[in-house]
Amino acid sequence: MTTSTQIAIRKLPGYEEDIKKDILASAKALFRQSRGLDPETGEPTGAASAFLPPDIQLADLSEGEKAAIKRAYAGIESYLPMMQAGSDTIGTGISAMNKGIDVSALGVPTIGASMLKYDPTSVSSYMNPYTEQVIKQNEQDLLRQQQQQQGQIDARAVGQGAFGGSRQAVAQAELGRNTADQQARMAAQLRNVGFQQAQKASMDAFERQQQRLQQAGRLYGALGQGLGSLGTGLTKSGLSQASLGEAQQRAQLTDLGTLAGYGGLERGYNQAGLDAYRENLMNRQMEPYRQLGFYSDFLSGVPSTSATYGMAYQPPASRASQMFGIGMGLGGLNQAGYFGGGGGGIFG
Image (tube, rainbow, N blue to C red; front, side, top):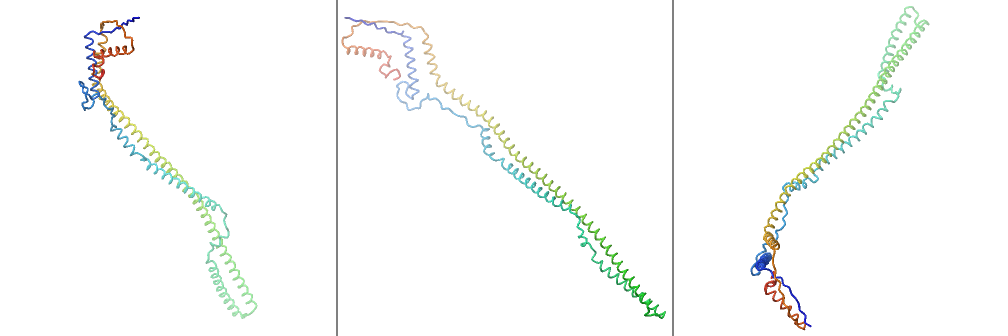
């Protein structure tokens, strides 16, 4: 039984086939150049590939960012001295308040002492030590006066011729009683006056002492309150100093944020310039490929004609003959240039 096979081969017009061959040749040359090979022979040239994409570059830190980083490192713990000073001031204020409490506490027993009762036995401390001497002196004066009067009584008795008589004895006894009474009244009066004066002096001294104690108690209280107020003021000042340290830190952070923000804008602008420069280089390298692609796309839109021809043949009976026929067909296509014409394929 005889079997016939119809083979259809699309044959491009000559001008279209030439253009496509030129496109393939240009593509092969670009490919070889991208690999650092000679575009004609395909041999290595030893030169670096001219079609390697440029490296991606990062813009350096801007001056603002560098300044922000430098000031950030320099500002670490810069607020501590102010906060430490505030802590010390607060400690001083607390010490002053504690001292004020101690001083105020001294006024309590002082006020209590000012309210004690008067001690009558304290009069002895204010008695005039010369009172007894004055009394003795007055007694001696009265004795001398008595002796003088005794002499007068004796003289009268002698003149009357009654010396040693009863009338003389009576007069002498009366003189002795009067002298003793005078001595007693004088001593009592002097001692009473001395006691009254001592009592008044002791009571006045006690009153002045109580007033001084009350004044001292009030003074202790006022001094304690003053120290407490001073301690409160120092504590507030310490808190203000510590707040200044915190405010300094916040201000530094604000400055750093401003520097970093403007520095970031500057670096972003520089990065955009580097990116634009790299994109320009890439566009220059890809321009031949885009032109080649445009040329190929343009060609694919042009109508073309094809010729179809066929032939009938009697296939050999054996499989080896069939394989031989396929090999001959492929060899013919290779000779036609569709497989590089012995050059190692399309890009060989």
